Every structure is written in structure tokens, then in C-alpha cells.
Length: 234
Image: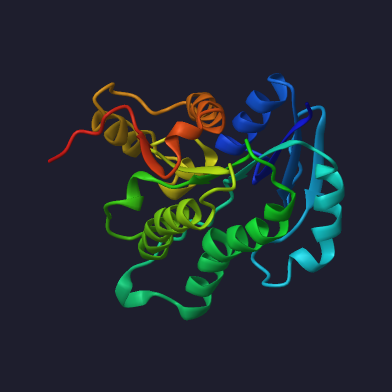
């Protein structure tokens, strides 16, 4: 039985680790992103999901790459993370963040759902900030709260199809996105790690292994799973 992973944003970080994990477990892997995934054996489809009409140029290529796969796992990983506040939220930037983080996943769902047989799955990447907030990340927090709602709507709307869905919410993971957001400051990264019960950042591979588990477990349908090593609450 051919299994296919379709993932967005697998050129680095959690996405790349997930692509490797699924590839090594005999999935055909299709990556959709602006930058190519550096791994061998990955089908690359270049796309700019910040554009509302992005599927017009690559939708047929995505369907062709999936082919006649009997089992599709779709991981919505790509996201945009801006530094912004509610008092300074630029409308155009906010719109683009919602396009990448929310609307593009919905568009991709609509493209692939007709091809998804029972046993397939749709996995959303949320965040610790899907259920709480910090200052200075307004558009990201709003979008990550909304992705939980999209997953829950997915669960209800796909009842009876045999397709399950999960929202996995990673904690502070050692990725380029996190490092860029904090200015690659060792001091800030140490402070972040000190707020975790294990005293360290999460490795992308840990999240990749959890995503693979979620894909194989329909009993988790509709679940919000926090994978954060235990954050210390104050």
C-alpha cells in the first residue's frame, strides 16, 4: 500500500525533520514550499502560500505527485511568525499571516480531501501559543488559536470518512524560526530553556516522531496535544 506525506514548509526545522521521519518509514514525501527540502528522495513543489491564488500554479502538480496513494497524511507545518502587537498590527501583514497560517491550509484541505481514503490524516501544527499568549506576537497568537478551531471543525465535518485529525502544539523547539525571533541570542535561549521542566529546548526530531505517531493513531481524532517538555508556569 502506497503511503504519501504531503507537508508544507519542509525545507528546515520541524518540517524537514518530519519529512525525514516519514520518508524513513516508507512514505512517499511531497514538500510544498518556496525553498527546496535538502533531503534526498523528496518531491519538491515550489509555491508561495502567501498569495491567495497560489494553488492555481501548482494544484495539478500536487494532485499528480499524490497519484493513486491509498493513504495520505497531510501536515500543515508552514507558518509565518511576525513581531507585532495589538496596538501596532499592520492590516496587510496580518492578512498575509492569516493567509499562510490559516487560509492556505484550508485551500490545501479542499484540494486533497477528495483523494483521501479512510486511514488518511490531517495534522495541524499549533503551538504553546494556541491556548495562551505572550506579548509581541499578536498575529501569530491569533492564528495559532484559530488553527485549533480549524482542527476541531475538521474532526466534526469529516465524521464517517475514516480520515482523522490532530493539532500538535510544540513548545520551544530549536529551529531557525525560534532563533531568528529572539535574535539568535544565547542568553534569551537559555532563559527560554530555564522555563522548561527539562531545562532544554525541544529537538525537531522529537516533534517529527510525535507527528508520525499521530498519523498512525485514529483514536486521537480531534485531540489537541501539547508537546512541550513541561513548561514551568508562573
